[in-house]
Length: 298
Image 1 (tube, rainbow, N blue to C red):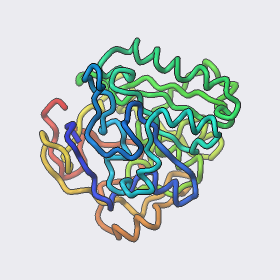
Image 2: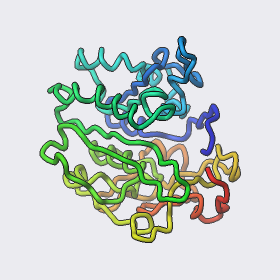
Image 3: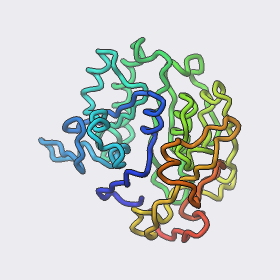
Image 4: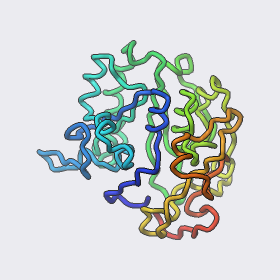
């Protein structure tokens, strides 16, 4: 996906929500300035300043049609509901929280984003209910440089990392690691895509037995893979269209052997797939076999 259009991903493409529900794990999203629970619109403007507040593209579950059933829409809430659920001690086990377009730094600065994070997180760090066994992942989606490796600041907080304050983790991770870590933590199935081989965050891998592998093509002193451009796909307007790639229903996670969700197997069958359980993933300059190299900055 290389655009900000109103994209809808077909309902036969599964997400982490399907994995969570199959295991009985509760989930929800809290979106700052989303006008109401289950809002499926493209965006919501500030009614006073007319600036962007909520945007659908920053609420990943909403983009997938499998998450637009009435029940799943009810789990996607305005940010104010977070505090109601916190007070009632009814927060879901897995949450995805997005500030608005000003508070996330997109239309402002990292200083504004940092101030918002501090206002939001510092009180929670004193809340025993919220902190118990909780792992908070604070991260960004991408950098702004096409000429450098796409490295983003990421911070782990919460009761799950108590005692590791100030430590640094030099291992290689990507955004699939976020899904892989969730899968490892709750012993979930996988999606049969790049989540299967992604490194699990070390603090969780130490408890689940997952192996954390190197990817020197990205992290080495002379990186060759930058991971800052996309290859052809259903929503790629610059590089070219391509059908939805089928998941690989036969791969398992390294060492721990997590398998693909049975429901995904039933829907897709055993089709040829670009996916494997390696730690190296393609990008626009190093696409999967049969895909054109991306020569456009996106």
